[in-house]
Amino acid sequence: MRVFVEGMEFRGYHGVFEEERREGRRLKIDLEVEVDEEGSTKSDELEQTLDYRRLAEIVTEVVEGPSRFLVEKLAGEIVAMTLERHPSVCQATVRIRKKAPDVVGQPRWVGVELSRRRSEHSS
Image: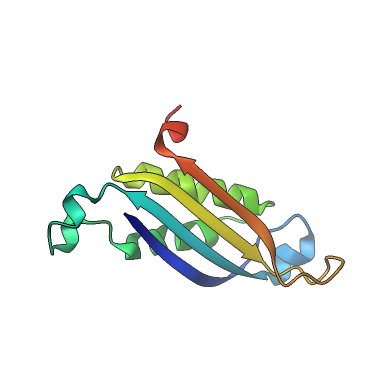
């Protein structure tokens, strides 16, 4: 089963350039995880499943934490924290989009997507 939070929006103060870190840039983040559905689909109790609010809290904690130069670093921290805190998660995928008005061609978004399975994380 997949559980997700999609389209979370932040003003992030991350980037290589001083102006990005000073002024901030608009970020849009999606986090999707795959969990073992064994317990979660047989019960109607929140405690028996992965509450998507917990996923949103991880994203918020990382994005609002210390400034990083690279969105790749943000993505890695979000995925690692998700796997560490939620043993039922088999795979986590995060997509980070960032407004980058100074990039040639005026792309709507720039960003990264990172997916990691638990076996990759624990090695």
